[in-house]
Length: 260
Figure 1 (cartoon, rainbow, N blue to C red):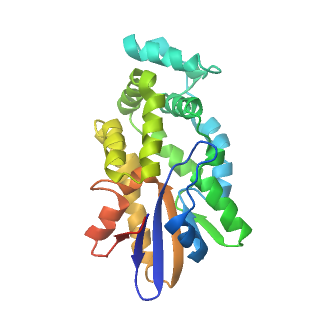
Figure 2: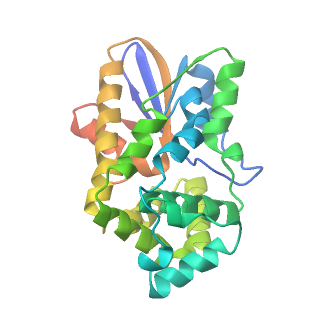
């Protein structure tokens, strides 16, 4: 967690995990102080948009015409995909865009790793701020967030799907390692794991990470002109590396301090 502050404004920036194992204790120390102090919570998606994300996914995910997974993947990638699919219900992949299949695979991996959005940071923060009658906002809409994937060119979508399928055998252990690094506050380990996953697909990194970080950093800089205390909570992957939100804020000339 980082802090940007001036005489009458404080903005805490908390790197979250959207899904966690049951019983994970993440709300102590400096995080607890930030929750108590904040007048406002800013998430990637506000609660109403998050609630509608599943329906929006079902609208955007279908292909215009079915395409068998065997026509998209082969070799190790196809084997990895089939093994992951066999761990639960069918993905119904033939009728879905590549990006949508990849999203469903990611959800299955999290489930197999024992992680659930019900135990995630955003769910916990939303409950706490609602109970306290505090404002909750969001940077994006469900449609806008999913369109980041929907509008990726077909080649990039296929590359992302292929990589996810090729790495499916190790995905559960990778997710657990990511969660453990987050729990330790190990920024270097987080950066390494996240960058290895997306650095080789620059188009996707720009759309899914860098451009969004730039928009959120600009919002934080503008919000500093208004008095109050805000807790910004976004995925931890957005706060690490040279194009992470803290680095962008610092590059913009503002002082930012890691507080937990």
